[in-house]
Amino acid sequence: MLARVRSCAVLGVDAYPLVVEVDVHHGLFKFIMVGLADLAVKESRERVGSAIVNSGFRFHPGVIVVSLAPADVRKEGSAYDLPIAIGLLAATGQLKGDAINHYALAGELALDGSLRPVEGALTMAIAAREEKCRGIILPEANAQEAGVVPGIDVIPVSTLVEACGFLAGRIEIMPYRTDIDAVIAQSQRTIPDLTDVKGQAAVKRALTIAAAGGHNLLMIGPPGTGKTMLAARLPGILPAMTFDEALETTRIYSVANGVKEKGKLIVQRPFRAPHHTATTVSISGGGAGQAPTPGEVSLAHHGVLFLDELPEFNRSALEVLRQPLEEGLVHIRRAQYAVTFPSRFMLVVAMNP
Image: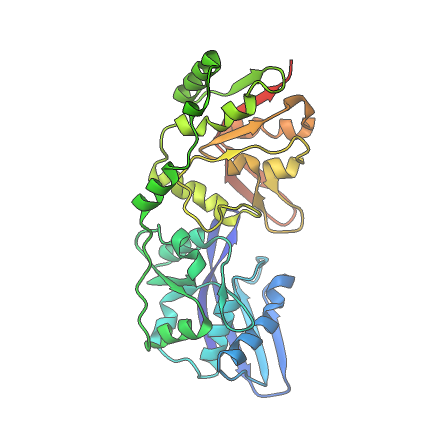
């Protein structure tokens, strides 16, 4: 029996629709996955099998063929665990109902059937809305991030059993909607500003003028004069982010690696301060042989990029700042992909005399 499940895949800061097709028939056990899946996707065979059994369902002992379409685009990550599991249950007749055709799904499965968060939930919700889906089913940890997208129901689930119950119509789950006003009010209480700085009237005036006009800034002074402290307080005097700016910045952090703000709505202007040993790729973004990730110039989008000890930075790392400063974008082309990341920021640099 054949089943089709709708999902989304992330490339850069955008997402595109993806269809997970699952076909099962009798024979010696074999699990075949096609569609340019990387190692993390292929390992879903073990995660999905254990999650199905530990959730009280029956795992098909015959031949299982999973196709990820479009087949000519490389798939990476663990977000396809949930749609593969749902497709397998539907193909074996353990999950019935028409709702499976109207919702997109994404989520990583633990061996006990619980769901873990995935990257790119916000951009997946936007793609699902553009594909006219009724809603998107995501892990609970991704609900706040995706809940800001208007015009689509974000259904948070914590287990595979809960997702099946919702699709079968046995349980009702209210769509999650992020309280944007509450998130903004909470973040504004944690923003440092120039009230913490005693003295330095000339530098504070320069920061104020730069913030008002969106100018870049160079600070020269001996160690210990407060250059880093002053730069860190610049976002506190910048205008508040609009909803569109917050949405665009959150999309970048949603697909980034190693950022503590992942899974949250970004309503506070970013402040990024990479170490002077940062590589060119970490500044510009990209990565060879893997999914392209945004660099520091994109993580500082609509905020401040601070480079302390400017002369210590690698020259090639400084050269990649030219295009983002001129165009507000960074174009990255590798053998496997070509992506464009937004990167419009204020550049603040500091150095010793």
